[in-house]
Length: 170
Image (cartoon, rainbow, N blue to C red; front, side, top):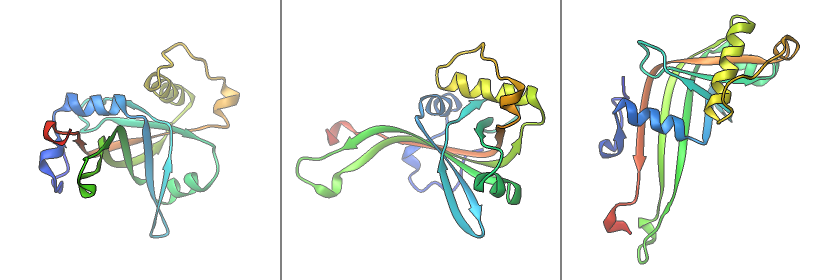
C-alpha cells in the first residue's frame, strides 16, 4: 500500500521492484520515534527483507539492550523508517531557486518488535550483514547476543519517491 497523501505524484515510485532497488541502494537510514509527544530521530544501520503478504517487508536493526531508544520502543512501538540515496545536487547556472537535491527515498511506517530468541536475532543480524555487503556465514556468540537488542519493524505502509535532474535542467 502506498502513501495516498504524496503531493508530488510525478516523483512517486510505485513499482515494487523500483522500491526494492531504492531500499537496496540506500546508504542512509533513520528511525523516527515518539518521545513524550516530541519526535526523536536516529540514524541507524539496517537490513531489509521481503515478507510474503507484507506491503513493505521487514527492516532489521540492532542496538544496546538499554537506553533511550529501548525505552521509547517499549513505550510506543509505532515508528517511521526513512531511507535515502543521495543523487547529488541539481544546479542551474542562472537561477538560485532552481537548485535542489537529487535523491531516491523511502518512508515506511510500522510496529517495532524485538527478536523472540537468539535464533531470530541471528537471522536479523544476517539480514543486516547482507544489506551492507557482508554476505553470509557469520557467527554470533550467545554472550554477544545477550548484550545486543535485535529488533525489527513490521511495515504496514510504505511510500517511495525520487527526484533526478531532467535533461532541460542540465
